[in-house]
Each structure stands twice: as structure tokens, then as C-alpha cells.
Image (cartoon, rainbow, N blue to C red; front, side):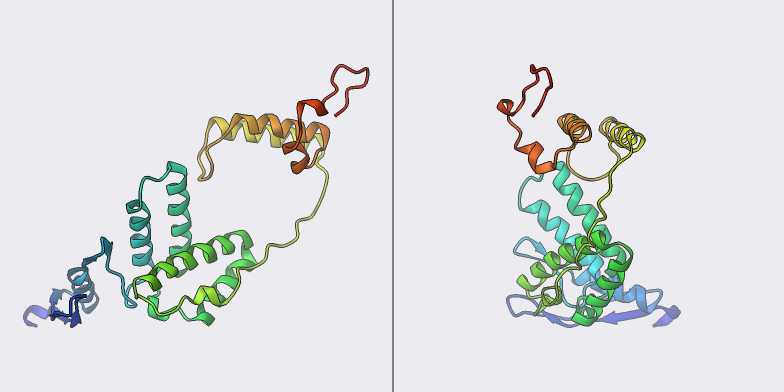
Length: 225
């Protein structure tokens, strides 16, 4: 075009069958294409339009908007969705939905699992949910994440805390209660008391949760539970 600018043209049919032939101009081919995609974005069934040409980054924005549109969400729940979506975008964000093959997705997930297995499981779970919604609105025909399981977590090493380590753990948890700076469940001061019991008595978590008043014999010469 005159002035060294670029024009991108498209052709699509809306849900009612009407043809659209939009165009957009930009200083670079990429800018013209981005402007065209922004111009052709539209709403359907109160959902932002997503196609197989959309990037995972765009899918994540649409997915979060859809979560909000389904009804009020607790602040912690929305925070978790947002954090999980950011992890997905970090590893898949610039890929188009049409580029998400089973092999590519599995390779990215397995590579991530070698470095951080819990994070790889979260990315697998979240992207699988995103793509399930993409399939529902016909943006994809299949969900590649449904074709393979999330990575297994390595078996944790069992060890006993030294008294100094137990004190550090207890102090760190109480500091987190007073200064919460990470996503997750809302801090509950009762958990600090439960942690003290776990450290002092050596109960398993299941045993602690099942503990009743009748199990406590604190008035005996040798208190037991």
C-alpha cells in the first residue's frame, strides 16, 4: 500500500451464515494481521469468539472472562484461576490452537515435569480445562490434553525434622498468616494450632483430623491421646 503500510484481508461466515470480508491496515504485516483479528472478534452466546487461529494467550483471556461471567467467584478461587492461566501462558502462550498437537503438548508438559512436576500437573489440568471449553464452542475438534495423563509426582522422601527445623517451620507459617503474599486458600489461624500438635505429638494428618475430645486424657498423671 502507499506509504509502505500493509493491509490484511479476511473472510469468515458468522453463526447466522452471513459472509464477512473485513480488512485492516498496519505498519507491518504482523500489525495488520493483529488489527484484522481484533476487528473480526465478535461475541456469540455471550462468549468472546475464539477460533483455531487464536493463540493460547487469547484463549486464556477468554477462559478467565468466561469464569467470571458464570457467576460470582470467591477472591481466592479467581486468584487461583488467574495464577494457573499465567502458568499456561508462560509455556504455551504464543502457540495457536491449531498448533496444539498431542505430541507437542506432551513434550512441553514432560519437559516441564523434569524441572517442576507439581507445576506441570497444574499446567496440564488448566490447559485441559481451557481446551475442553474450546471444543465446546467449536474452536477445536479435539482436546489433545485428554490423550495423555498428567505427570506423576515423585514419591516424597520421608524424614524427621530436627527441633531447629520444626521451630523454623512453625515460625514461617505464622509469618505467612500475618503477611500473605502468595496465591492459595485464605489463611486459617487454626491450622497453626494443628501444626503445633503435629510437630509436638507426631500424629499423621488423618489422625489429627479425626481427633476427638474423648481421645484426650490430659488430666492423667501421664497425659495421653
